[in-house]
Length: 116
Length: 111
Image (cartoon, rainbow over all chains, first blue to last red; front, side, top):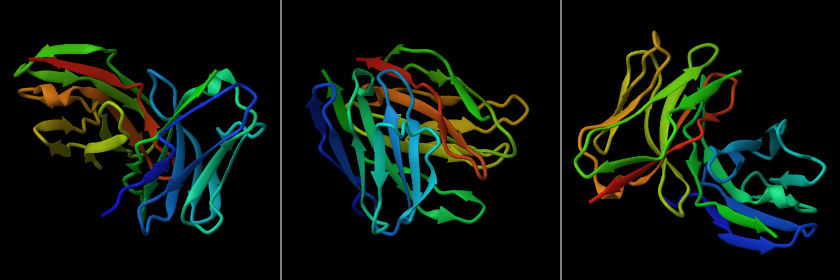
């Protein structure tokens, strides 16, 4: 079974530039998550999709971050314009929807972003 | 809201030593508890889980028991290997709530 695919693995940009990350979840997983993991910290949820609808984006800095999952499969996360503090690893995860709660999340390898 | 507290790292052990990484939590309702592991340059992988009180999750020699009375889910392994060097994250979710991760504990095992 193929895992969660993310690209690119690494990205270096200058502040005020824009950047986009791509994620393809495990086939059949309706729920998709984007996390931000700053060095030395645990992942912080940015946005959660179920199919192509947003379930939770309460921690997404909407003035500069956007995400979409138009066809309910793969997803893109964009930052425009980037700030120095956006330097982090951006993780994508997916899960099945299970009755009574949330399914186990499976993570991609992440995209490491450096903003100079 | 829900939260997870982990022992601070880094933890440095010699091969074959006993490992304990403490994790305590605060949650509403009846959370499910998880340990994820992150090897260098990789994403998080589920190591083990427990979904109700007194459940014991186990995998690859690691174990953790869901203790509701102490709100804890400590990770243990009887004999660590160099290949266990990684960052370990305790996490929880409860119905209607998203995953909450602890800050992670870095483990280094020396030969």
